[in-house]
Length: 490
Image (cartoon, rainbow, N blue to C red; front, side):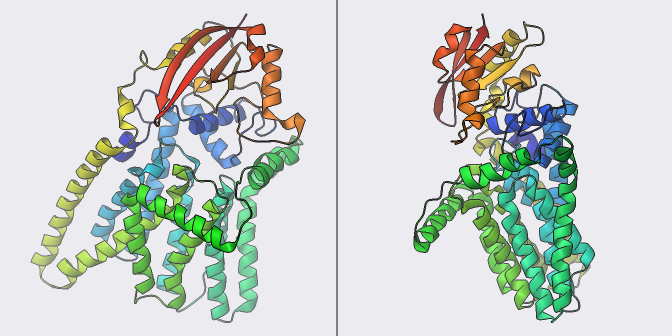
């Protein structure tokens, strides 16, 4: 994918993707495929399918992001195919073939795409295909029949995968099933409406079965709950008590700044939502589907009060409806207004030329505006982590600990499998002393349990008892200055 090649720092045009989140996922995926149990042996707070997918990427390349780039490209194919299927509900084949990749383009040029490899990016195809299922039903089948149990079951599977990657995105599928349930109620099929809910929940449950078996065999079901549910529900959100009006104000302010930061796709999202509401081809319930899904997805992601740039990426899937309106308008202008072959041929030529121009302009736009492009100039020699890597690999079978920040990327470059549960510093205030990341990391340093320690800005005061400083580097990204240190055991 040309867009990903430029926009994602996992691509071969970049020397390395040193985004801490992506490296953390890769480290846990690596640990998973080396016999360690997530949450208990290595801790990060996302869901198991994310680590499984990253583990597959690790099998492709142990010390680079080549496997992650391939994973991104595969998922992007399903994103674009899903966009194409949605667009075909509104426009012709040629128009859909052109606008489907452009829908993906406005996603990856946005600030919310970040550095590439986010959990939200991994979730995108599951949202897209869920969106296709429900929009197709309300546009084509709602007037005649209810959604089939097979489709509802598949929707449950999509929801279950989201639940096991980043469950804040489940607001989308809550709304999805709510609208399907309403379709049964409006048709007075009350018994089937209850059956549909159980079928959907069973589809979700199926996706949990592999992990129930995996953790159950190892006696780790509680660790799974503690690391993924308890941490994210009770420790991670930062919303404080307040009135409903203050909550609405906070959410409105979040949405306002999201629109400003990601205008590339939000213009199309807003236009598309209005289009779907005003569409004459859908009944009352069908007109509500798109805004309801958007609203619940937004609430699920942001009601906890935390905002990071890449959180809003799932909202970009609704840009497809803006392109649907544009495609329908172009077809009305060039094709449906005339029955002549000249008009249709002229439209085909226009679409081809427009596609070529749009792709080139999109790539130029990415190249000139993406926060990532400037990092293309980095090389093995200029990027300090490669120097740190060489110093670590001077020792045979080294062990490593990352303190002061999330995974800086040295685990990836060295191929080291984390040996400490808190292999990176998590910004979590864990009340239980036995589960406190700071206590455990301090103990590893104090007792000299690893060969090397990489630290950012700060490190335990006791570190010089067992370690010596062998290298350091000043480094800046996203407008913030940091200092990295590399310590070696004496």
